[in-house]
Image (tube, rainbow, N blue to C red):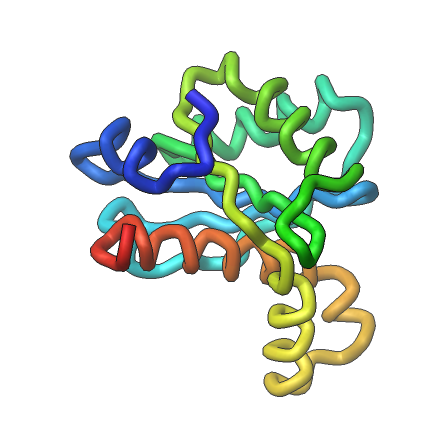
Length: 155
């Protein structure tokens, strides 16, 4: 199941469970994970993009290790809410991950990278550390926004 509707994901996971957030970029995939109660999202690792089969295998390993029950994939819409090439790429990633058997929520992430960078600057991360970790921090912001809504926010 791939959806943009939070209620659909909530219905697919009535008992909660660990979710994995993804911020798919052209060179890397930022990964974040949350607790099973949907309280806190934490930046995880950054997967260097290779061939999609290798990317999928790396993500499947994390899913298996952490007992992930669902995915939240950042959907980079244009400012007017329309789809562009990056959002089409994110949707293609979701379709290619669908056979993992996990419900997938596509989450509007228009400002996640900018917000992550601002937060990292406030925390005095060096440019080098920001470059290494920006995608996983953006994935954590995407996931946190989704779980805030899932755990009792406005549906």
